[in-house]
Image: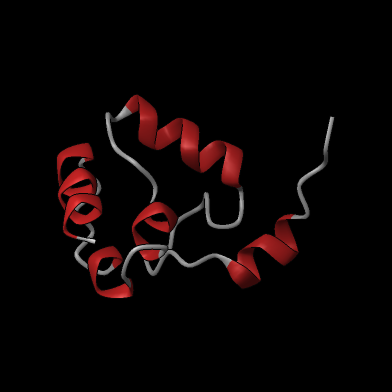
Amino acid sequence: MVECNQEQLSETCTCTYSCSRRGKCCECVSYHLRMNELPGCFFAKISPDAERTYDREFKYFAELVIKK
């Protein structure tokens, strides 16, 4: 199993929301999927402005992908 370097990941994490899961990608993805959402880093890859809305809904993500 690949080990996560959480210190390095937290330095490069593109999410602007500060929380206890920052840099802990597995925990972050699991949390957001349980909430029927996607993590901020998914949105940041499309647009930093989109990530800053804190709208993590699948529908919003799909709309951004279609527009791009």
